[in-house]
Length: 355
Ligand SMILES: [Zn+2]
Ligand SMILES: [Zn+2]
Image 1: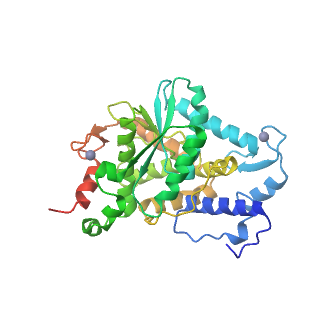
Image 2: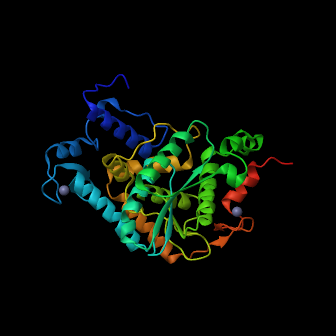
């Protein structure tokens, strides 16, 4: 940090934003070429030039601060925020993600995506006068990392006036993630930390949300995340098994993604513009998973061919429309799954010490 030409606080803010974008879009393990590019966002030269001179293409008044490369729009701060929030509402309506009388549990990790979602959901709660929004967060028990995130979640809940439900791996599974990871059974399993943590978090959130009377869980998965998940399913031969981030009928608590049509970089920019805090501590278990390779590929492809993520989503949705869904309930824990025993129960079996 000390190498930077810190002329003023703005540069500092740009730096934080830039690092976050790199960090959240390209993954944890890419070297971050911060110094030559701290001025302006996005950092593509053409876009940067545009942003310095252009007025907003919507209101024709404000100074453009963001260029939507895939649509050609250049937006001022006010119009960016307005269109961002409108798109979330449109997404909810288009896919019928929420109902008027829902009790919506927003899954909040403390990352900028989920804090942004909580903020947007609270704002649009007024469009659903009989619906209620509350936050659910899970403490995995990752020493040194979770504390900051939990503090951010608590602060956001207070600031927005949203009730907060907390749960933990310890409460749901009897052991913390750190304890699971240090077991010999885990070390012998050859599994990556994230491949355990992800499914276990998902289930813990579901359990706590259900207990608190939720009728639906809203997650902060962005367009990028959703396309990555479909892509991963395709690479594993599981495409068509179940849809990602859409409401499905059945006994399971539905999980919906109101950011389904919102690119990750726009969530980052929204967070930046509206003062949503960014985490400063990296998860110590973050690893180069299959998802990182898919994310890297898709992000680079989108950079070169803007609009590809939207096109990919459309294709995956079409593929699903022709394939049937076959969700059933896990024979061990009763949670929804596309197989006999759910992924969490399989994982728990793998990492449990043999008696
Ligand atoms: Zn404008
Ligand atoms: Zn299960």
